[in-house]
Amino acid sequence: MLDRAGVALHVKREDLADALIGGNKWRKLKYNLQRARAINQSTLLTFGGAWSNHIAATAAAGERFGFETIGIIRGEASTQRNPTLQFARDCGMHLAFIDRATYRNKVSPAFIDELHRRYGDFYLLPEGGSNQLALKGCAEIVPDLDLDFDLVAVACGTGATLAGIVTAIKPEQHAIGFAVLKGADFLNAAICRMLVDAGHRSSTNWHIETNYHFGGYARTSTELFTFIKRFHSDSGIRLDAVYTGKMFFGLFDLISKGAFSRGTRIIAIHTGGLQGNAGFPELTFD
Image 1 (tube, rainbow, N blue to C red):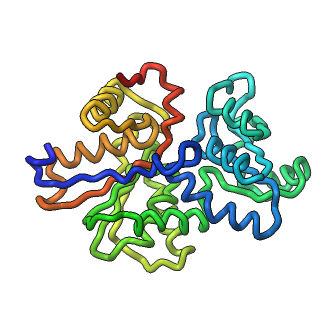
Image 2: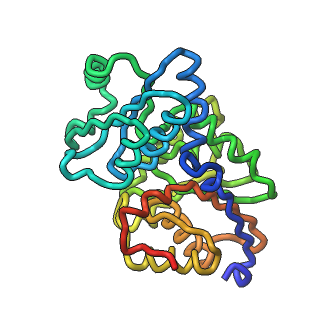
Image 3: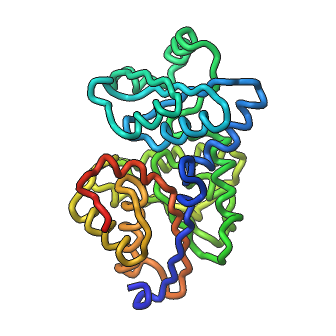
């Protein structure tokens, strides 16, 4: 298909950067960990769902670099026993479970004050680790791309990885984010705010694809699983069902429909997240 379309596709294997803190999570954590150390904070507190890549990566980073870690988990404890949370516990992370209604208020000052009363002083990492220091880390993906390219593609949850990449690409290059959330049009405004806060000039060399979410966050289908297995068989590369599988599915669909002109050079960023596949026992690799 790539030959017929006249498109060159390369994969940046961020998933291979580190066995436990690889992918874009290490990029997001890098400068946050440095900042926490610089201000003498010994505890990291953050948020996530039961299968969160960010929770797993923060727990692993805390154990490796000597931070205490606290994970505020969306949902009741009785329904949240899985390999991701067990891994976080094994890394020494303290887990606290809150109901979904309370979780929606996780950024409110009153809720943060309550967390400080309960846990004392801590360095606050937002859900997904997405803040300006995360953008700074994600921007460093671009200088590490050792091929000339016209377009870079990445899966989007909060949009911070895409925003960081946009700050570093050239004006004539383009970035596409593949939203893994249903109803993700809000990401356009969110990414614009991130770029403004980062002091980046207004740009039009990026956009969000919102048609490849497969029903919403962590929602899947037989079609998606079939694609992921075929991709692995053809390339030897494993994808996850929440992020990278949807991104590559969307990218190949667009290529098949002639969305990119002949001669386009694309780099797709593999952002990791393979630990989440444990939540999909029907997704097996030969």
